Amino acid sequence: MNGGGDAQNGSAKQLTAESLPVFNEGVYLILSRWSALQLAIEEEWAGRRSRQLADQLASDIFSWFTQPKAEPLYIDDLENVLDEGMLSLNCEIDDGSVEEVAEKLMIMHEECLEGDYSSVEKLRRAGPAAGTQQHIRQAGNDDNDDSSDDGSDDEGDMMPGSRSNIAVDSPVPQPRASSENMPNESQMEDDGWTVVSSNRNKDESNEMQKVFHMKGGLGEESYALNSKSQSAYLSRAMQVLDQAVLDLCTAGFPANSFNIADLGCSSGPNSLVAAAQITGIIHQKSSQLGRTPPEFSVFLNDLPGNDFNTVFNSLPSFQEKLKTEHGQDFGPCYVSGVPGSFYGRLFPSNSLHFVHSGQCLHWLSQVPPELRDKQDPLINKGKVFISRTSSPAVIDAYKSQFQKDFCAFLQARSEEVVAGGRMVLQFRGRRLEDPAPDESCLLWDYLGLAFQELVSEGLIPEGKLDTYNTPYYEAFTEDVRAEIEREGSFAVDCLETIVIPWDGCNGGVKQYDRATTARNMGKAIRAVNEAMIRSHFGGGDVEFVDRLFQKFGRIMVDDSKEVEHVSIVVSVIKKQSTV
Image 1 (cartoon, one colour):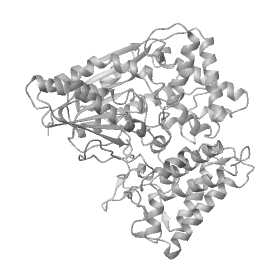
Image 2: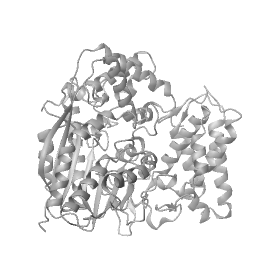
Image 3: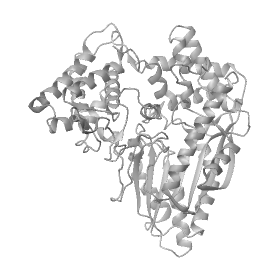
Image 4: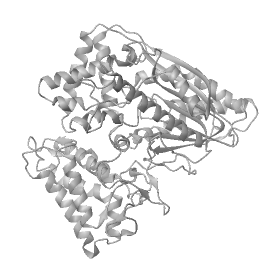
């Protein structure tokens, strides 16, 4: 059996008599929403026994979780169970849904162990599963052996609340949401199928999409309640945003309709701030110029694991606020969710007038490949990010990955934004050419030290820490300008830096209680990083993450350094086509 991947301690705790039937029901509910499995049943790919084999798969999953084991429960082993079950139905899957189903089952099992049945209850209340959209190949159909996913499906169809487009007010034409358009795209064959590898070693960028997301919900450790520094950056960049929108209006935009995309919207109170500001300015400016205000389409994008439900639940109050502030003639404003990576195409060509992205582009599509090379990996000893002790090769690997990703982002948007359209991008960066200043690296150093203490206590192996690297990079301002000019599709209108104080998690207001700052900073970093940490070090032990960030807080309190936090805000204009 494969011992890698996320793990739950299978011997320490068992489901209670009360939890067993609830968990069993949850297994069937999750499988009932797995498009690939339901298609295999409906088409009887295994003949008349298809339904029986599907029921056997559900039984095998339940037994795998509930039979006593000396070893922990590893998600790779569960994926093998799912793969074998689907092969028994003559179904081969390379669309990533096996991993997604396994992750949801592991999470639900962990919740049931704690007597938390919220996931099962949500599935009970959910409506019928969305129709299948992916390409799934029936085993034995060898017309094209390498056929698999065409990249146009959205794995979010499997579960409620994660469809690619959810409209508010009334239907509007929706863009195609793709969760596989990353810089290294698969090759498209003439028959429309995409050639992808049939083994389990998926492209790291696709794996990153599955495990990277902010902590959802509205709990104490959620991103929604721990994103004050992001709010402070957004507030201080508002002048640049306002000017870009006003300039766009002066240039003749908008017409009858206006399309806005917010890329990396996340969840919580910041998700709709930019959309409200942009639509409000355009409505007011149109009225001042004697024009009929346009209809708005707002597309909220983030990775499929984002807590879109929390965002969508806030839409009624968002719409009401717009009407209250701007009058009943405002809009209409249609809001849609578009899951997928912004490092690839998300929208039809020439469909967007304005793009905003706040505090996102410092996150890379993947950990630099040089740090993941199984044969000869670069080792960033005891660190989780660039530091003063990192080798030049490690620093160069991070910079190279940023350059590739940022170029891919610009190229994708160059296809989607109309000529003369605007983008305002805000992300963490550096004022200094030095690749490892304290203002970029200090907090990551604290986190690395906290991990090292767990290693010394024997709670995690040293090799596990040495292979954990954060997919994050703070670019130098002039490097950002150079990349935009090198790609060539956009002209830089404005490029500035924004600075908030050390107590950034207090909303950008300077305070002097270091213990409070450390506690708030720990919550903020945990809200962003916990999903990746649990994926790498084992997802079942919440106490492990609790202990990690307790140590982070103590280390930060014991140190005396204070640094400012820096963000880059850049406003660009889509150039006229020269073709």
